[in-house]
Amino acid sequence: MENLLSTENDTEQRLAARLKQLRVERGWSLDQLANMSQVSRATLSRLENGEVSPTTVVLGKLCAAYGLAMSRLLRMVEDDFPPLLRRAEQSVWTDPDSGFIRRSVSPPSRALAGEALECELGAGVTITYAASPRPGMEHHLLLQEGQLNVTVDGRSHDLMPGDCLRYQLQGASAFATPPDSGARYFLFLV
Image (cartoon, rainbow, N blue to C red; front, side):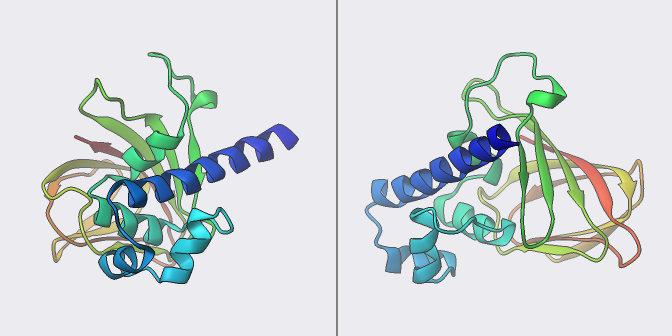
């Protein structure tokens, strides 16, 4: 148990340092980033100092401001991976507020164009993203279990197990589960 907590704490601290580094590299003040991301200056400061863990929504806003996919940002703080990545070795991140679970099945790499994520949302959960981290980013979402409503650029799609939604994200998006059903899905990003 201690090793797991230590690994999580190390990842959180590396994420905090990377968030600060991204801002400093661009020459942005906390106030500038707060305006661009719509995340309060106080929250940004606490995130960069490793005092709090970011939620999915906050990370989404920061990624949009930086022009990065969330998985790319998280990959920047994860260790390198071998060509074969066993399930037990795959990085898992959980949003403490929504319970959203994101498993990096095939993490991004400088040499590869795509990546694969396994995601889980509990019943009655909605996660919204104000903007695409990179306009035109290609997504392929394959619902494995449950029900999921995905809104992409203002258009709503109800998915059932086995359905695949393909889209190029230009703007806002939302993922919602009904009150009586969660969802487990794979998301492939290119």
